[in-house]
Image (cartoon, rainbow, N blue to C red; front, side, top):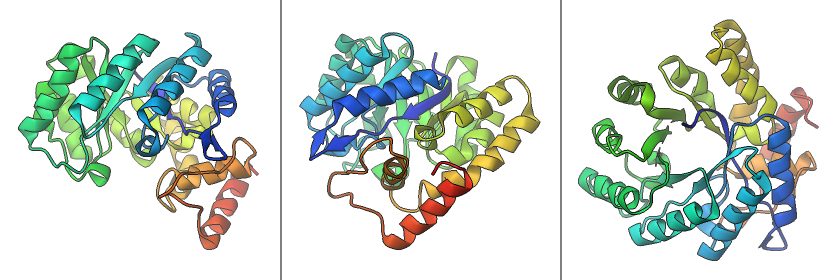
Length: 290
C-alpha cells in the first residue's frame, strides 16, 4: 500500500508559530520532485512540541495542499493511547491516506501492552496504519513477534523499522510476506533493507534531495542494483551529515542554508554548534546544494 520514497516532513516555524505558507510550499516541492508520500507530524516534524491543535492543523494543511496528487501518512502517535486514538480519528476525518503511529515512549510498556495499544487504535479507526519502531527514541524495541501478530490485523499495513537491526527487518519480511510494507526508518539502511524485501523509506534526507532518494529507490525496484548502489554511496555522506546532531536539527539547518525555510526550531531543540555547522556546510557544498 505504501512504498517508495516517503518524506518525513519538517514543520517550518516562524516567530514561534507554524509557518503554514512554507508548509504548503514544501508540499508542492515534493509533488514536483516525484516523492511518493509525505509524512507530517513525525519525529522530523517535531511532533513532540506540537499541541494537538497544531498537529491537526498541520495534517489538515498538508492533506489539502496535496490535493490527492501525493499520499499523506499523518503522524498520530502518542504515549497516551486515548490521545493517539483522538489524533488518528482526526487524520481519517481530514482525508489522510494513512497514519504513522510510534511505539509509546517513556512508559516502556510490555510487548502485550504494545499489542493492545495498536490493536485498540486499529479496531476503532478504520484507516491504514504503519507502526513506527524506534527504540532509540522510545526506550523499547517492539519485537518482530509482536509486529508479526499486529500484521494480522487488516488495517495495520506496515512498519517503519528504525531499530537499526537488519536481522529484525528480515525476520518481519520473511514472516509477513509481500502484503506487509516494511519501510526503512534510517536513510543509511534504505538499500540494505530493500535488499531484504523492504518497500522503501521514510526519509529525512529527502527533505533536501527528494529526487535523488526517489531515483535510488526506483532503480532498485527496477532491478538496477548497480545504479541503486551508486546513488546510495553518493548520498551516504549527506545522510551522515543529517545526523551530526539530533534530528531534525541538521536537516532544518540545511534547509535554512538552502533558503527553503527558516531554520527555527522549538526548545528543547536548539541551533547547531558552530563546528557542526561548518561540517554541514562542507557536506552541502560537496553536493552542490549551497
